[in-house]
Length: 158
Figure 1: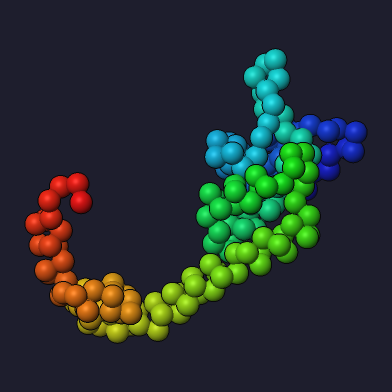
Figure 2: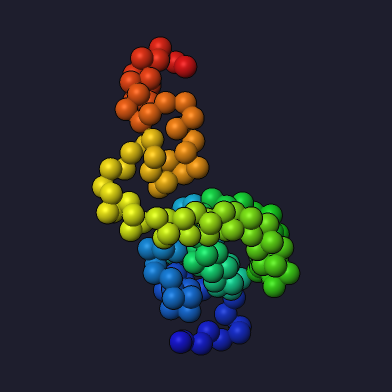
């Protein structure tokens, strides 16, 4: 991994990419979504402050555990500019995200447990399928084929 001298306070997109492991296109995407910022030189080249490396590491770690980019952006927007997320920041945010992650884990466990049955069955019935209709939400009202007709019969704008 290339080392960047301490006296250099701004990094090129290539340096951030090399140090963070994120593709240049990913860095451009993160910037377009407001997750990181850069300034432009007189030659229109991007320059990132050193704290961008920590922010990119933070973004990538959050993505690996399934946190959506919009949620990550909201979390980063609560931090002061030019400050890297600290261990305390990560602990606070991970506590806030724990409920969401627990719900996803439960959903994935249900998918894993019923996937073989579903493939074997092949029906994907909205009436009885635990994957298409978890907790039989629609079964209390109507069967699946009637749901589609119900939507078509509804007046526009409701």
